[in-house]
Image (tube, rainbow over all chains, first blue to last red; front, side, top):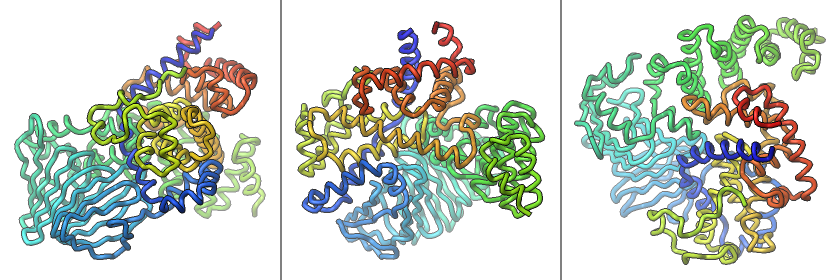
Length: 406
Length: 212
C-alpha cells in the first residue's frame, strides 16, 4: 500500500524535477541579493531586526502584496535618482534598480529617467549606448526610448546604442526577447536572443542578423515588409527571412518553452503582438489553447479573446469550445470591464452547455455582469432563475439580494 | 531523508565558481554567523545552497504555480529577515523548510479565498504552466493536484511532503510544527480522501488499480 503511494509520489516528483531543470534560479537570486542592497545600514538593520523578523514571519502574506505595490528605487552610486532627472555619463555609469535590474550607460551617453512604477521604469536615451540587464518578474514592464524608437522589455540582457545624427538604432540581444517599435519597425518587431537589429529611421529600413552557429545572412527589410498583414512571417518575407527566423529560433527559447516555464509575458513577446493572430490561425487545438493562456495570463485580454474566438471558429463543437466561451466572458468581465459583452458570452456558454461543469458559475457571473452593466431587471430575473436552480450556490446570497430589489 | 539532498559547494556549476568567494565547505553555522553579521556573501551562499531545495518544497506542495519564483523570494527574504530567531544554526535546513511550508500554506489559503471571491472553480480552466504536448504525464500531474486541491490544506501539506517530497514522518512533523501523532492522523485522512477523489480521475486509474 505504502509502496503505491510512494510510486505515485516518485512519478510526480520526477516530472516536476524535469520541469524545474529548465528553469533558472538566477533571476530570483539577483532579486534576493538586490533586496539586501536596499536595506538600511547594518547598525540600524541590527537594531531593528526584531521588527523586521516579526514582519517577515507573521506577515509573510502581506509582504507578498507589499513587494508588489512598491515603486522601484533607482540609484546611481547609492544616490536615488528621481523621475525626470537628467543623466550625462562622462564615464561608465551603472543605474541600479531595486528589483535587481541594471543599466550601464557608456561614456558620452545622455538621457533622462522617465516614469518609474512597481513593475519597471522608462529610460529615455538622447544619444549613446546602454548595456541592459532586466530581471524578469511577473508583470515586468521596462521601456527604453531612443528618438522615434522604443524597446519594450520584460526580462532580458541586451546592448543598445542610438546615434541621433544617423538616426540609427543598434540593438544586440544576448538573452530573452524584446519588442522594438517605432519608425521603420512600425507597431513592433520582436527580437530573439542572438539577434542584432540595426534600424535606420531616416531611410525607413532595418536589418536583423542572427549570430552564432548556423547564422543566416542578414535580412534587410523595408517598413512595408515589417507591417503585419495576417500572414505568416515566412510567407511574407521570403526564404531568407524564414531561414533566418529558424536559425534564431533554434538559439532562443520558443514561446512554448517560455509558456511552460511560466514566463507568459516573455512567451507573448516572443510570438510578437503582430504575429499573434497569424499564430492562432496556424496552431492546432491544444497549442491554440496554450496561446490563449499565454495572452490571458500575460494580461493581454484582447489577444486572449482573439485566440479563444479563433479556437471556437476553427474547432467548433469541440470539448474546448464551450470553455472558450466561458473564458471570453471572464476576460470581458475581469480584465476589460465590458459587462455587456461578458453577459453575452456567459449566455452563449449557457445556451451551448446548459448542464456543463461551469453552468452554475456562468449563471452567477451572468447575474453579476447584468447587475454591473446596470440592467437591474435582467439581473433580478437571472437571480430568481439562479435561486431556483442553485439555492445553496456561491452566488445565492447576491441572488437573494438582487431578486428582492425593485 | 527527502529526495533532494542539500547542495554541496562541490556541486556548484563550474561557471558559478568564479563568483563565489566564500571558502569551499563553509558550514551552516558559518553561513548563519555571516548572515547575523550582515555579510552579503553569506546570503549568496545561503541562496546557492538551499534555494533549489526550497523551490522543490514549494512546488511539491503547490503544484504548477506561476508565483513559485516570487514565493521563493518571499521565503528567502523572510529567512534573511528573521535569521536571529534561529536558535540552533545547525538546524538551518529544517528551519528554512518550515518557512517554505508556512509560505506555501499561506498561498493555499489565499488561493482558496480567491476562489471564493471569484466564484470560479480552478479545475475548469487550464492550470498555468502545463504543456499540453506531453499530455499523459502532465495529466497525471494535473489530476494529482486537482485532487490535492480538494483536501484540507494541512492534510494536503502532510501528503505532499511525505509522498511527493519523500520526507520522513519526523521531518514532516517538524516542518509543520505538529506532533508525530498529528501528522499520522493527517496523512491517514489525506490518503483516504485522495483515494476516494482519485476515482473520478481517469489518469490516476492505473495507479488506483494497484491500491487495495
